[in-house]
Length: 266
Length: 312
View 1: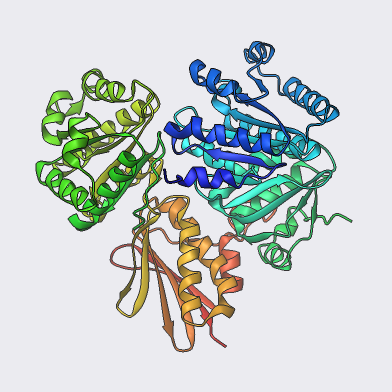
View 2: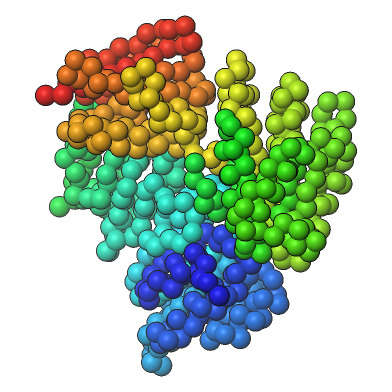
């Protein structure tokens, strides 16, 4: 049988990736998840599958993984406690490595994992924290998003905060965790990108001393600069790294310096 | 036109087409993709269009008879379907759900997704019932939130040319994707290279791509960086302030490159010279600084905002 486009893309998922998967072929979900679990197994990872909502399918997939939807996790799903989820995740990762696994690999159906009607800013906040955790632990996490559980806009927004994506439209920009307290902003920031990026920046700047590396920013216009200016005003300790010359130039011409300065990190 | 449509369940895509052949090739490709992936297909169209779709599907190697017999392809007459739920010129939500909702739920009941194509909205628009068409789009959107299917709608491009371009803006906003932010082009018109765009937020990026490509082809790469900022500002303004389709044109005159954005509004842009401690405006500050010359003029249809970049 010929590989589907999604199947081919998922073959390329390497350990340590945080993948945003916009499910375009729901009828192939089982086959694609099985493939992901098999690859994790082959890479010496301890595998886990969470969701989907279809109990029968969850049962089938659960048989193919080391861990599956834990009754304790089910219980917690009644209320949303991301900190508890992340603590359990760190714990499981440490335990897995201590018995000889190369880390964790989790395939999560986000419709199952996240509460219904979670505001899109909270989905973005969750993914940004997850990104930091995945990097820290060297884990492999594949987040499957599908409609109608998530709107098309929500899915586009969440893809832009994943370092690796499968399916969906190529996001105009990417905002993901870098080393330590750095975040990487790459791509083009204009009117279309502004609202999604504003949510991401607002989330990460809740922590003081945050640095945004914009070496891979390829385009910005007034809408984009306005958003950065707002972020600077709201957060005195925000710093930028590797500011491209074109950004300094446009900032000066559009006179944003009368509102805020883009402070360079040392 | 991108014919490799990957319609995700939940998508509500609209296409504006000029000739029937454009419509036929897009719809046939969309249905073929869905059927090939094991989705159920629903086609609600005029008898003439249905015949054209089947002919194309047959040419593309789809055994239409077999797929229909298996129940995976359902075809319905758009006019007849409309009469089952239209009441006094408006679609009745209960009747719509009883007929269309029920059909979709039956097809997707056993974990199967579906791809649907409908032209009932276009028929309503054609007979002048614009509010009815918009209301029907809203009913479809409600249904899209409850079952795993995607919906492709099509309108003839003539709807954009009419004076009621505000309802046109409403149509775009009722869809998750307008097929390409590009409405038409690029094409040559009076010696200029032009492309027409929807008033949607992805259009400034599409306009930048158009400008970058054209200026690369014409050997004006040194101008591209500044031209992209200017076109982004002008098209963002056109999208946000006019909510109507607009045309971006590129012209090579007297050793300069001239970019222009034409729209249907008669409100001229105003540069804000006031208090710069707030964050508003500033787009025109960039245009003023980056372009060699710029201006804004009213014309018969609306206005033109242009900016010139010197070649040397």
